Amino acid sequence: MTDESEDYYPITGKLILIVEDEAELRKVVKRIIKLEGYTTLEAEDVESALYILKTEPIDIVLLDLVMPGRSGIDVLHYIDEVDIPVPVIILTGKPSLETAIDAVEKGAFSYLTKPIDREELLKELDKAVAERWRLIREREQLSEYTFLKMKEDWKEE
Image (cartoon, rainbow, N blue to C red; front, side, top):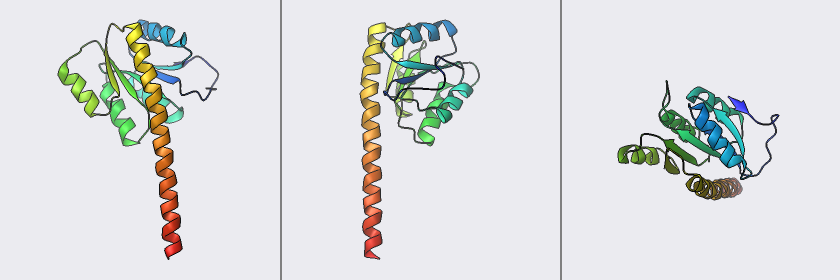
């Protein structure tokens, strides 16, 4: 697990967790997205990714599915289980219709195949940033609605 700053991440909607076991690919992806103004954290395995998701305000996850040990699907399960409003873009070198459907059914926002096409990655990141803000607004509205409903119920008692 590595990071490029000193535990300070600006609130931009652009803190991206790259979960990829291949160090060279992590480096390439980081270089591409850093040039676009994104801040990155990296995880080389599922355990590191889960730790980062528990401790950092991640906005987008770039997730390899096939890694030694546990699968990237375990990360999707965790995100769903604890209800983190974060878009996940799957990166895979073993594309198949079945894998794509499975990932999307488990909550992936989008699905890219390796080798990664720079333009396609940047296009998906732009969409994921918009989705992240939509999810945050939706959560805030739900929270406000719940508060108002509770306040209403309290007045009725």
